[in-house]
Length: 90
Image (tube, rainbow, N blue to C red):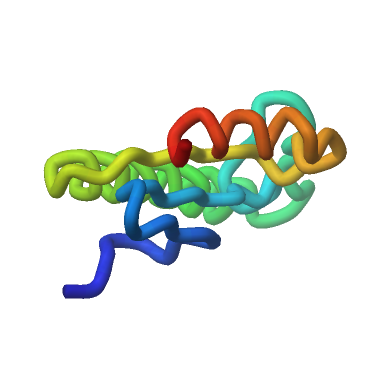
């Protein structure tokens, strides 16, 4: 059965999914900057993406999966990311 959403990494034995959320597309609170044009469109698009993310998290957790989401900008510290994943896979 396919998993909800499109995880960037899946650790089947640990039942762990990892999503790397793009700062622009998912509205990173630290570095998202809204475009200057079509403001209503982008506000609705971002709200839809966030709602979808929450629904995907819920579906996966209800199916027994652990979900990790990490902001794209946080990948500059790969050691912290790997420690977080290892905590759920070891």
